[in-house]
Length: 260
Image (cartoon, rainbow, N blue to C red; front, side, top):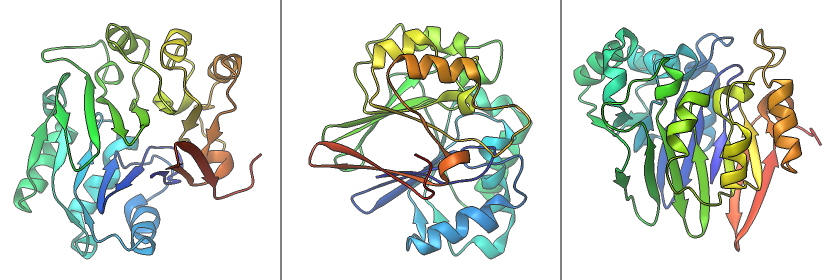
């Protein structure tokens, strides 16, 4: 199960399987204290007191400021985190160095990932697709940690804020069909291109963005590309939290709000 937690203009995805729990990013630019007031209550409701890992795709605030908040607020430490996962490239950013310093003080280790790495917790696979070692893009977005979640016939592609430049690197690999594609950069026009959609042929595209956000995400060009591929994207700004389940080799989406 994967849940897009509604964090407004940002990303925070919860991955649950076989008693293990992971977050892919956690941040927001329009909800203050997003961890305390959105993420923590949701995790409590789900009975989660431990995250086995947190993936940080890149250093933008709308992907990491919730984790900074968690690390800085002792009142949130009823929740434990087993490990942070990130790329070596991101350690060059001051925001990430601050997170790593706080994590070290709390004895939370960091694991560094690059293309070709494979994490195997239980029957799940986290297959790291981007960036490769030493890659430097023209922007933080181009360097976004991108991975494929696989397990029991289910495949979902997590893209952070990967832009067209980063996608060029991604498309040099064998990707194959995915059941779900997490749209990069909140449905920006400059991400999730036609070639990527053609290559991974997703059954569903999901977007995390805020209501009436200043960036006008998701963009019209992005929406046109997705709909041309025959997909009606599910968007948190319209649907609230989105729960993705895989039962009997069938994809199921549960939307908190009636947005159809």
